[in-house]
Length: 244
Image (cartoon, rainbow, N blue to C red):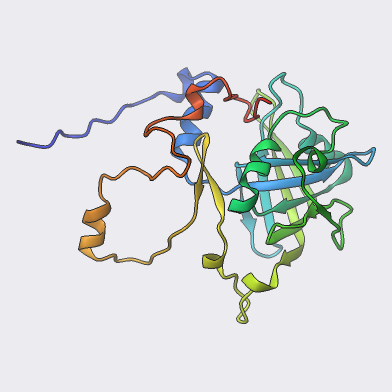
């Protein structure tokens, strides 16, 4: 019996609406790092939100980028407004013990509500920026705004920020100046779900390791049925928000 030959599905991106394109992007670009971004409003209210369109821009100066979609009603997210108005933000690393608080911080709270208080997290002061960081996050980066770039016609914006201070917990900071990533239960994004970074390797892998894993689906930690996805549930929002 011959194995079925794989057939590619070809999709013209010009024929996609915003939601359809978002579904394909979040499923195709995996795993994605999560920038758990804290900001401060002009009236002094702290905001905290997970941004999974998050990556490194440059080394010197060290810079990161965030891409933010609008809220479900089409208005700008508090994260973007606060960065624009204050010129500051902090990215906090998400680890497994804070995963649920991170998930809840994606709820579209009112701008007058402090997400740290709403989800039960402790603030820690930064050195340069006025924005607080998440106390129990093992790594945080204080950032100052470099530029904001509007992209397309659906109110998406890219933020570049210069990292002015790194906060690294001493138990994950190695003597040679690197970070001990194996000691960090980092959480990333898989489409509308999360993933735990709990293995590492360099190539080439032994043939028996490759064959043993070939064709296996990811192991679910939440005990939901295989193939379940939040995208198919009423809780999912194409704005990236979580419905309370």
